[in-house]
Amino acid sequence: MSAANEGLFGRLPLPERQWVGDALRDETTGGVLLLAAATIALIWANSPWADTYFALASVVVGPAALHLDLPLSVWAADGLLAIFFFVAGVELRHEFQVGSLSNPRKAAVPIAAALGGMLVPALLYSIINTVMAGGQPGGWGIPMATDIAFALAVLAVVGRSLPVALRAFLLSLAVVDDLGAIAVIAIFYSHGFDPAALAASVALLALYGILQWRRVKGWPIYLAIAVAAWVFMHASGVHATVAGVAAGLLTRVTTDPGESESPGERAEHVIRPISAGVAVPLFAFFAAGVSVVGTDIAATLSGPIALGVIVGLVVGKPIGVVGTAWLMARFTRASLAESIRWRDVVAIGMLAGIGFTVSLLIAELAFYDDAANLSGAKLSILLASVLSAALATGVLVTRNRYYAQLAAVEEADEDNDGIPDVYQRKQPPSEPAS
Image (cartoon, rainbow, N blue to C red; front, side):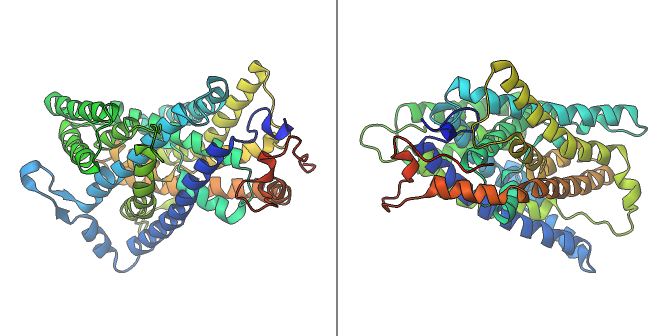
């Protein structure tokens, strides 16, 4: 067995490599659209026509009888992001059941790294906002998240040849992050709890899971149940996106005899492009429009909220991710695959500091009743994400030549059968010197 296939972040099995490639391809496209949408929102919100932007975000649509007469900005956060979290739920179930996290020994490092990457930023934010005057400790959840779409958009520009195993590590981090973020939102950032509505939503989700278990077919049935569960979850006071991730986790990802793909795979193929290409960019458009006209930017960015978010994402994320991964390797006596160096893992840790989409969502939930703090939190999220992207870029560009040489070995297909030759040789060629 080649050294590339041994140790942490070694070569993925071929089916998992193909699944990861498909997943990341859509997310990369979505990341470009997300950045474009956020840029348009920032420019519009600080232009002479800013009033029209904020008026558009405040337009109310939806049936009042169901208490769903909501502003467009709320529909983007509660409705469109439920689609995003559904895909995250399917991804998480796939990873744990048949993917790279299905092997407990191999799953330990990315899961621990993801947890470290959530806890350290939250701790740093809490410390800063506890010791500084005017601090707002309630925003501790903001720097916990990783935006996979934004991170992959950065890789599309400066890290196209990054090894697939490291991309899979980043995806695993983001997926576990998403689950952690939705748990934090459900427990700490929900408002006006209604137990009867929550019970109805849970019952509908249980029905969804039972139908999946019984192999009942018919996507309109599942769509109707998921939408109804979302409506009741929204009415319960628990953030409605929880219904999305729960439905995703309940969707079957294994194939039965005679099936070419599982219900989860079919749903992903249909819904992932909608999530990446429509839902997330539209949320970014409505969430990223921060007006800085008349704002003392220096004072805002030196305040406890901004410092907590920036230090949490830019410093806390890489320390949490890389430090925990290193400790896991140290105490389990695991070693990196021969083709990977710790500075490559550092680049992934820096990319994990891009906390755009879910960080913006948590900021809106944490400071929904304080416009000034919300604007400061959003501005710091944008700045921290850009800083994290820039730092990761600085590390990646020094390794791109090596990554390109490694990719040439890993992706070579001399017989043109669609399967990389390294998966068909008993003695694969050694990796280039790193």
